[in-house]
Image (cartoon, rainbow, N blue to C red; front, side):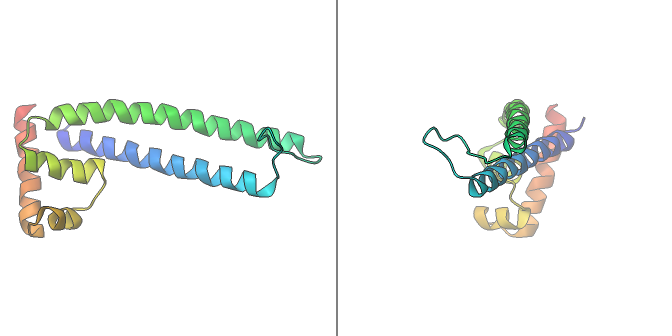
Length: 134
């Protein structure tokens, strides 16, 4: 697997985890807006206990997948951090902004104060440098 593929795999996992996090929050919001809660913060459902139980089970399954996915993200991030630690500070910053913070090169060039073209050249050099190191 190439360096670019490893970094892309990490970015994809991170994106999936963030989407799942959003989905869980959305489901929780829908569940609490439909039913009232008692003093124990347990949903009260009039005649729909099976549906509520089923929804809570699905939410728990989503949370379990979320935790598992973030575990994978953490493993990949440690690998990425180790890999880019060999780069100089500006190169590390560019890679972090692009793959960890998921920013496009156009935005990164503004953050770093470079033209897009210069940022793109640095980006290409980073890959060549990382390929030689591995």
